[in-house]
Image (cartoon, rainbow, N blue to C red; front, top):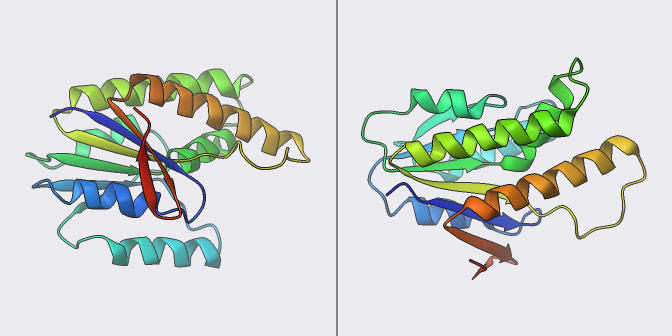
Length: 175
């Protein structure tokens, strides 16, 4: 126990389903949701995700400070699904206007998350989007997000015990 698995994929690739299926083989599962219902479409996505996971799973809603919120896990939790890292990056990017070097801050928060995950004693499945395969975004904020998300994915992959890429619902183990 105490392993970190990164599950990467594009939008609607099946990465969340894959991570949830892997986690479901454990006894006590916690699901850490980083999404925020900022509009009707996102609220519908959140509702769909809630329906797709077992009711007995503990759910922690944590758009920010995920590493701190992991202290709220139930005793005996054996697996944790963090879904998703890219929304977490987006939340941090948009929620801290006072921070000049957002990338440094976000990388530090991700390192704190990884350290916390390693200390949990539960296996952790981190879901993230691979956002670098599309066209170059036309605005600075979107390019900044893409670049930071790519760096954060590299950081997590370097420390993960396993890394999977999910495409069209098919998972391929990379590491």
